[in-house]
Length: 236
Image 1 (cartoon, rainbow, N blue to C red):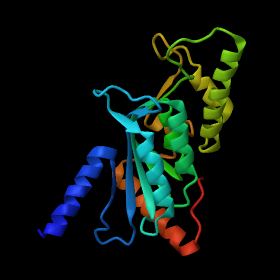
Image 2 (cartoon, one colour; image 1 turned 120 degrees about the vertical axis):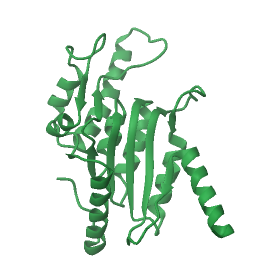
Image 3 (cartoon, rainbow, N blue to C red; image 1 turned 90 degrees about the vertical axis):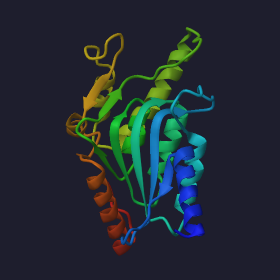
Image 4 (cartoon, one colour; image 1 turned 180 degrees about the horizontal axis):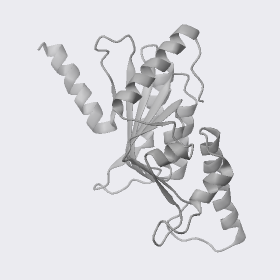
């Protein structure tokens, strides 16, 4: 292996380790695909502990802007295994992905909980593995909360932003989504719903069950269609 190739592989490995991102080799295909992983907890303005697995929004947002501006990247594959996290950071990532002109596909692996739900549905097409889970619950807030009507109005405003985004980017309606969010019989000491694999598809949140093979194949199909028509395929 040449020195240049060794350096490229080293840089590639470091990038995966630091940001969970990499542009995949073509390997005979005509399309360049960029891989983004959303893992652990989505980190917002506060740094989490060194023992926590996190996705830092300051890594993701600039890369998404670079992807949009790049002539070399044809599509984006988003892998999710997240417990959720900061609402503002998660929504920012979801909005950025949704506004990309490049074809995008998401794949929910272990889970896409809480604010991971908007990220999962922000792509042009979404998959979940049969054992993957999605947890839908109301907004929670850490720290001191002032018990005044304005606080609860603010909670409602945040919740409406999340609900509005999710329902605008998948097949579930707002009434049903809020029912799942406020379910009291499933989560102990909490309200909300756990959807496993096909259940998320049946509720209209995720497009299809499948794994990396199906997700990659779908992304290449979307890219090829866009190249032929000049326009990305819309969600169905």
